[in-house]
Length: 155
Image (spheres, rainbow, N blue to C red):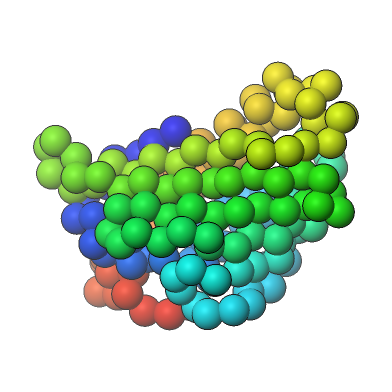
């Protein structure tokens, strides 16, 4: 899933690079954010509570790759280590100006129940992440309007 925003890749990356900023656009399904490690870059991490389809689980998110201003890869671990996934943000210049921000989420391993209900789980995740991408665009616009352009620390 992706969203086009009227901002150059550098300030978009700067915003996404700060782990605490992710709460601003994912708190509709990821709550109780507890950030650890560095504020930004490889090693930035958070433990959150994911609440989707009536289920709640703690998830540890850690940035494992950072390639400014183009790509951020997060490793997500939950279900006592049985569920491991990667979320990848790619920021590219948009043809009409601004940037296209894409996010993909893929399991590396998952508990049997997740695999059995994969079509349902994918649909729920797709909807939650589509909302997150829309909310990301709003958060970036608010930062631009306030003059912070995503370069500040936790906001």
